[in-house]
Image (tube, rainbow, N blue to C red; front, side, top):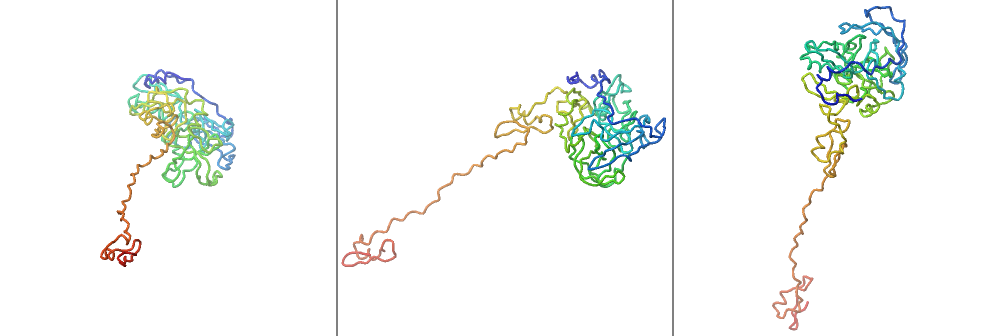
Length: 411
């Protein structure tokens, strides 16, 4: 579905006209109600039971029961207790993959609190001093917040309750990013496990090593790499595919890898029915514009989910459509942030890293080697007719002197 968002109107006009209805809400796969939790009317304490979870070869199977209440203070929102049992892997996300879920729960923390993907369902009347100022559904939370800071004229004028210091908010309380209050960020080595995704794959904190973020996360937010042993959950140290929370899109998960070991942004988009439905021009907090693929959770390493121009009006084309070097080198590959490459040899534009065949280096024309002057052949002794000239000469081809005898010169 395309909307007027793709016309490149300013976000102010789009957000005021936008509707919060029509979200891609999805049911909670693998969830069932439970009566195992202590009875609470408000979230005064956290309850979770992970005893029925079994870890094997990099993923969990089994069930977790929880009241969904946070295990920390400093909350932004009004969390309500709800006793549920979640099955891992959830039926909708058990298989080869990749799988997609635009909004709602994508996993649970190890304390049994909801982890959501990057996208929000939208906000209405979000400015204290400007009429309107809606944030349309399908933007990630950080992009929505930064856009509203610009539209409303400052952070202090934005009324929605965005993420608290622990990375969560709202009712029912849920996280959209780093589960910041559940682990020690200053600890050495690989971050500990902080949650489990609905496909059963563990989610870890920010760090791949001490003060070091992973650099090879795929479109889902995961990679194959070493994980530490954790006796609490029966995790053995080894190299397994696992997810990391991050400080840029998708913040939590962009998709569920399932049984995949790497999901490219191209595969992510090809398997998502939401990418490419509609685009919206959004702002950063400084007023800079960029184009956002609404409801698309497939982000590249730079946090981009499309490569349209900032007003969403330029349709990307394959590099091969460019016929001049200037057009080619200023363009990017289709569905990629990689620059197109111009081949000097063939005069064509492509998305591949072209290895040019080096032109031959001109070689100087070889000059003939100067030859010493050729000496004329020595005359025969018989050519000399006087005794003096005969005795001064040598026989041709030898060092023997000519001999004067009987009035004739001989050798």
